[in-house]
Every structure is written in C-alpha cells, then in structure tokens.
Length: 364
Image (cartoon, rainbow, N blue to C red; front, top):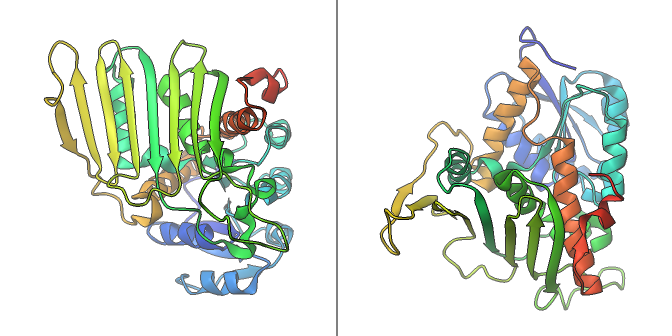
C-alpha cells in the first residue's frame, strides 16, 4: 500500500504509548503534514501520558484490533513491549496498513520469520533501527560507503551506558519478554555491522553475564535475568569481523557509543554524543594526526532520545509512504539483527561458537 501525495495530512495511529510511544508522538508533532489521529494502550496511565502530548484529540483504544478496524489511519507505529510485536504485526499485515515497528522486530528468529512469511509483496513494514540516522553514525556510513577505508575488514562498536530504564509492568527485566539484552538492545549494533560490512553474518561467539544490575530486584518472586555486559564477535561471509563491547553499568563515561571501521586503506570512527567523526588514511595520516570533524544536522526539529535519529527515520518513513520507496530497514534487516543477537545469547548460554544456520534454520 502506498499513500499518495494527495493525502494531507498523513494520519498516524500509535499502538503502545509508553516511553517510546510518546517519543514517536513527539517526533510526529515536529513533522509537517503528520497528524496522530489514534492512540492505543491497555494501560490508562499510558494513554493519559500520550494525551498530554497531542496537539488535538485523538481516538483512544485499549485493543490494537479496534484501532485497526476503525480504518482511520494511513500508517501505524508499534511501540509495545517486545513480546507483543508478533501478534500485533500479524493483524496489521492482514489489514495491510503501512507500519513502523520499534526494534526488535520480534523476540525470536522464528517469530520474525512468521512475519516475513505473512507480509505481502510491496507491503511497507519499517523496523525502527534508528541508530543508522544519528548524525555522526550517518556520516561514518557515508564515508565508508564512499570508499574511505577500502574494503571493510573490522567493525568495532562500544556502548558503555546506564542500566535499562523502568518500563510499565517491568516487562524489560526478563529475557522471555525481551529476547535477551543482545536482542533487545544490541539489534541496533548488529544492524549497523550488517549495513557497514554489506555482508552476511556466518558465525557468532560471545561472552557475557549479569554481574551488577537488578541483582536485588524481584518481581512476583522472580529475579531479573537480563545480561548487563558482554563481548560479541561476529564473522561475516566477506571475511570482515565485527566486535561489540557492551557494558550497562558504565554511565560514568564521556561517550556512550564509539564506532570504528577499519580497512586496508584507513580508519573512520564516530563518537556519540560528542558527535565527532575521525578519519585517517594510511600513508597520509599517523597516530594522533587524523582529521576530526564535529557533525551536525541543523534540519532536525526534535532531538529526542537518539540525537534526532528518530526524527530522520520518520521523515524517511513518510517519504516511503508518499512515494513508494523501499524501507531502509525492512523486515529482512529486522530478522538479521535479531538473529545475530539470538546467536550471541545462545553462545553465552552454551559457551561455544554458534553458526548462523543454527538460529536461522537453514534460511539464508
């Protein structure tokens, strides 16, 4: 389904109006020609929070099926807890309403594959892997794709940050609900590795644990089981390697994310939130003497939680709605980002390297 340019404004529904649902509403408010006409959440307090950010009253629903059946939306945003994505998306696919779904696509590879199998050809389904659009990350990707490092051999991503934030019902404290930290949080980084290397992951080896966070918490007699630190190595079919260094009790830091890409011709790195790009060419630069540039995007009208990345993502989703463009991060990208995270979780549990065929069921 393509929404033609004659539809003005574009009418959005937001399913799930917790922290991220409200963030999507804020972004849509900043975009010309976008209007939130429907909101949905089973929790009254979440609906109330969303209501406070609307410019005009919207239809309110407690069940996503009621919103779908109302037929008032040109597109919907799904920002519900991870474990609910699969059932909601299957209903949206059946109704053929264009959708932007928050990452991860689903909590398991098999559920992601169910979504891909159910999607009709040409259906616009966009997965919210918005880290691609952080200004410094976008500049890094552009440089790498322009050949700044030559053939990509190594991608290293470090995220040193704060613990998981509280969510409604504390659903994000348990692997069964999230898919595990390396799916829930790190699908962003595996997507970036996939995009930057332009290659398929073939093997994953990981080491991680829950060492510090949430150890003294209990919910219904159950203690949280989510990882709070890990190293993950990913091997790609091009011969490139990716490495993730994650620590979620490292908020005493300068940059939360550091991304470096190295090839035989040089190195490019992005530092966030410093929003700095450093680039060096072998034979031209030496240690301590590379080019360093601060990256800004003055067109971003809402910075939000991700340095304006969600705003850029919504602009591109809007363009896909209006002009029939393919999604930057579609269902296939959503599947692979989840699959690498699932392989990493399995690697930690079983203390061994995991071939991607094991988690993909032979589908490549």
